[in-house]
Image 1 (spheres, one colour):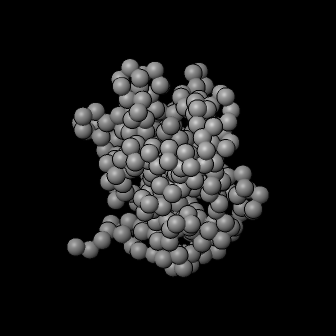
Image 2: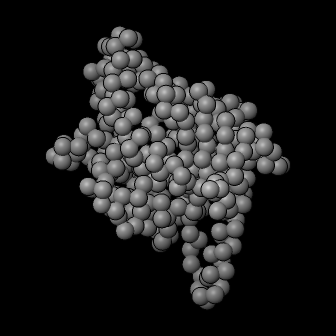
Length: 310
């Protein structure tokens, strides 16, 4: 059976950049990168610029299609935001990828207003997770308020006015009460999260009638070998123990005094019991629902690109 994907190596993908200019510098990248992940300008030129060009073409075509529909209906509606979903495991680099992509897309003159929303804000508050016995399942599908997230996506697409997304604090490991991110009819919205391509509501395998991905115009899955993702997770955990966890206000301050060896073992245990399980059972199975799959090698660089053609 033939694959629905076109397959590219780095060289053939980079050639599709055409004349797309590099609009980010080293200083820009330094501000956009996450812990233990360094994205080079070469990586931006080789991988991100061709993707930026592809998405710009898709956005322009979609805007034209909406205008044609308005002409047919004899009405004029507010432009509908183009929505891009970014999925993948914990520690695979979704946040850094999404921030760089946002910065590049915002530099195109046709769509300068680009918002980035993380689905962390739609996790249920810790008190609710504790009441449901799900605190140890944080990040699994059932730990999200899927109904609230779907309503948020519907409101974004309706483009009737400002929409509010809850804000999540990684330091507090919880939703921030009364704090919201305002999304007010941007040209593009990037939605980044573990579970954005899943087709269930997390309740006993029961399927939801509307999925988050139903609102996506384009979807991207960041892929890598599980052994590499685990290694990245362990390295990030070690860095957090030496930095963020040192703050007494951090939910994970109890890990601040771990020795390096203890930090490694703790991180591996968390991976084996939580994040690795979630990856294998819930996240990886959604990979082939993505329009674009970017496969990373051990050094975080993309080594293979697969673009859905059918």
